[in-house]
Length: 333
Ligand code: TXA
Ligand code: MG
Image 1 (cartoon, rainbow, N blue to C red):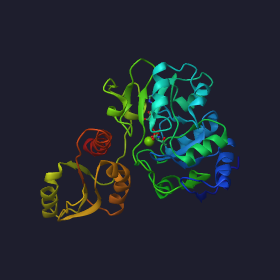
Image 2 (cartoon, protein in one colour):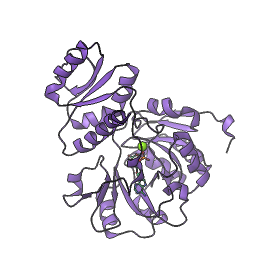
Image 3 (cartoon, protein in one colour):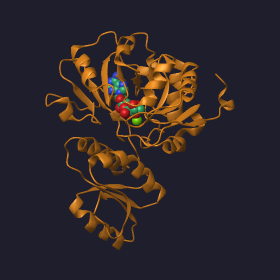
Image 4 (cartoon, rainbow, N blue to C red):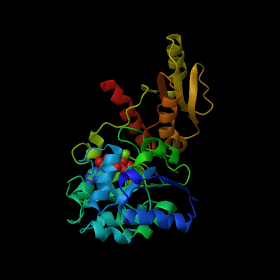
């Protein structure tokens, strides 16, 4: 490893579907040496390090400013590697992996005892997934090690859905940034505990409750899933969740008070008096654009960001969860 002071970020543009093998090999070599690689997944960009190298994983926590007891997701190239990090694979885990991997489902199981405690946040369990992105899988496969990767944002910032978002937050900490363009889903994976016989959802995400089946039990995630305890995105501008039919009126009231409002609103709903940050045709488009909208609203220096509420079904649940967290942070301050 080079000393930190000698580090310079190498940013490589790669084809999302057919990444250049030289770029993949370079990123994999950096991972094997204990360096940090930001890489695209189908959900958001991840900040990757060798999950079995405690020093490398410590660099992730330092780069993000992340509390040490908030564990990381370990990414594998294929489900066959699961025994390397989880000694006991339940039949529930096996069937979830068969149905949803590669894909945006993170499965919590008992952790192999030799996984560094820094990776698991000191828990006896570990969260694992096989991402559905050719770049992520190629890099993990070439590295030949499980890759710990939280979202590649500074703690308290929105998850990054473009390489520019990653660079804005972390450029001085990275060895390699693989830029494969915007991520496809835009919201993080769903985290489920699969140690029992029914999946328990710790974090709503891109795999919906409907996908998992009605039996999926939602737990109050605080105790078992440390990440949900921490401050989430703390926006520079207040966020208000507004029913779509009331957006127009709310924007008018704010304008009357001399406030500049931004709007995240359904398409074909022009809102007089608010700056359109994004307009979305459906919830999938909103999921893809939401985190970028948070960053754009800050850059545009709006006083308030009005966000249209969406029905709480399918991916709408994860969207409303993230909106509430973003809105609640300032309500507490
Ligand atoms: O889509 C994603 O999941 C992205 C991409 C990069 O894969 N990753 C991601 O990682 O969102 P991160 O670190 O930002 O969120 C991981 C979440 C946190 O809420 C963490 O507390 C939870 O997963 N988690 C990790 N290990 C856990 C465990 N053993 N038990 C319960 N929750 C766990
Ligand atoms: Mg995160």
